[in-house]
Length: 62
Image 1 (cartoon, rainbow, N blue to C red):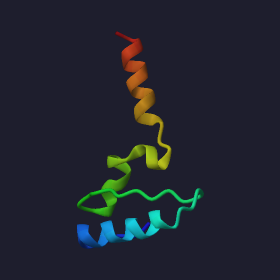
Image 2 (tube, one colour):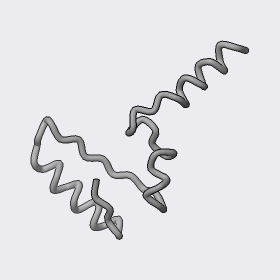
Image 3 (cartoon, one colour):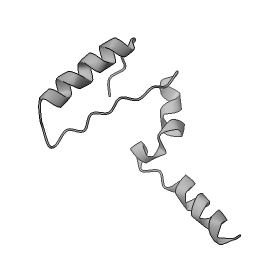
Image 4 (cartoon, rainbow, N blue to C red):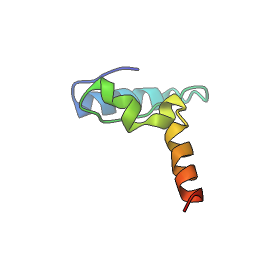
């Protein structure tokens, strides 16, 4: 993971990574104010199924 200070820098870097055409590389561009917000903003990035499980259980109980 790399943190960029500007959107332009982040876009330039993701363009470089995509140009590598590496099937084993996944490049994503995300926008958060603080790095601590990453897990809450993108739980799937961490394979956190807790929220999904809660959602399914809530739907099944109605």
